[in-house]
Amino acid sequence: MKIAVMGGDGFIGWPTSLHLSDAGHEIHIIDNLSRRWIDTELGVQSLTPMDSIQERTRIWHAETGRRIHFHLIDLAKDYEILKKWLEDEKPDAIIHFAEQRAAPYSMKSDRHKNYTVDNNVNATHNLLNALVEIDLDAHVIHLGTMGVYGYSTVGAAIPEGYLPVDIEATTGEKVSQEILYPANPGSIYHMTKCLDQLLFAFYAKNDGLRITDLHQGIVWGTHTEQTKRHEQLINRFDYDGDYGTVLNRFLIQAAIGYPLTVHGVGGQTRAFIHIQDSVRCIELALNNPPERNSRVEIFNQMTETHRVRDLAKMISEMSGTEIAWLPNPRKEAPENELIVKNDKFLSLGLNPTTLKEGLLEEIVDIAKKYAYRVDRKRVPAVSAWTKDIATTINRDPEGKSLKSVS
Image 1: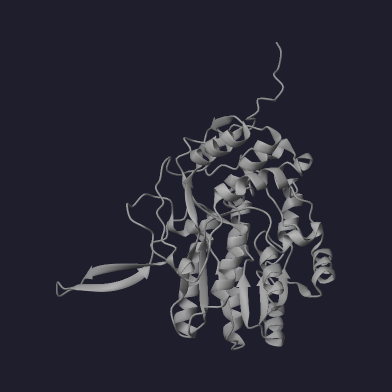
Image 2: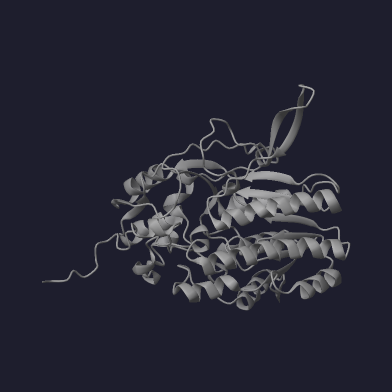
């Protein structure tokens, strides 16, 4: 297939592009490189050294003989350019990663909230709108988030996208329906993914677009089979307080002897998936598209769930690193259960990589290897969900700030 990977320079987009190119597909990366500009804005770099997208694709061609094409297009702003590219190239499938992906970054300020909404929602709508306008029947696969469901405790397993409900009709009889699982976003970032769901539902119903929405858990790990082939193909590894996911941040903290920072009581339960499993799931979705004029196909893309404090304890025992209990910068329940159905991917043959199998390798082979690149000042999570919470943030978990002497 000819596949357009929107956001193919990113954390999930790059290994997905390599994985699908390795499988024989013709890959076109479309990206505005905004994630690299955000590195500059935040004053922090990936733990792993990253070459330019042009150099990365050159190395891939030298190693494999396969070409990955790159096109500098901003989905959120360059609608006419995007539409013309789609009309000319006519990809068979489009994998949509082209969204600002960090909840803390989306909550940093009013400017960051506006940017996240403008970028994410416009990118999604411009893509769908263009497909309808040029009458292109390409399968759209979107990387969403488990966060659309929220993290409240309901005492039942979260289904894959749709919830069966009974409604009392005016006659008093029960009418059965399946609705999108009620959205409950916990940040502006998660809210944009909820808006994506509604856009997908409308365009599938109104225009017959074929869409698969992947509600993904927190991705951990760095390497896939393809990124291991050459040092310059390595994926990015974010450890900072805005883009570093909880597990990757614990790994780097353990590698450099920084306290494992648990916010609140650590009772937040989250879903996880290894990066290798993530790209496999995307390929499985690609090979199992919905029919035209059917509803959006929704998968829960995760393999296991853990409480944050249990993760911290696991890594503390593995590495000997102490745990620091800090105020929570997020506005969220201190404790939650998370029971998730993921039957679809398992039935399609996914064999998950578990945390216990891969954690030690990550600490030794990645975190410790590149620990010299860490800026310790960028490790704390300091982006607060509200102005009131901002006053409680601990910006110095190591206690290294200079104390004034009277």
